[in-house]
Length: 107
Image 1: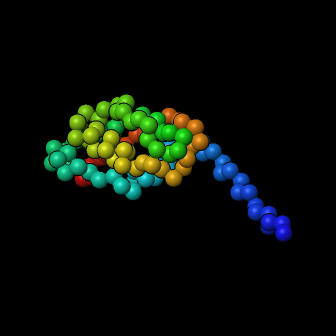
Image 2: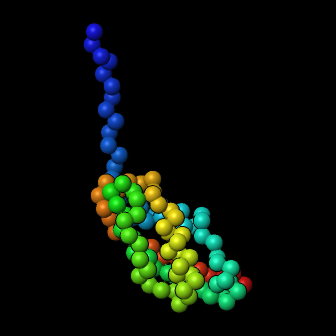
Image 3: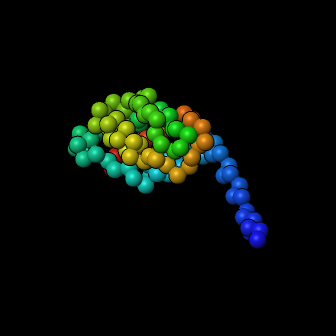
């Protein structure tokens, strides 16, 4: 007897660097917490992080590209980003993205 033919799933579209960046930004927004030590010191700033995302969605490398002026915020941002991986979007090939994480105290 012949086997029933199965539909071959089409390969998912390869996400663009912008789609990966949008996903990471969304994940950061949902998980970012202001470090208490930075809050007590009234530290604020923006941390720029350069990321290398592997083809399978894992993190190949992460490095601070632009410091905030607060080592506490820099470390918190780097730890936050590292904790987001692996991501659901699988780039299919390695890609590099730059992410900026803003820490502002609300009066």
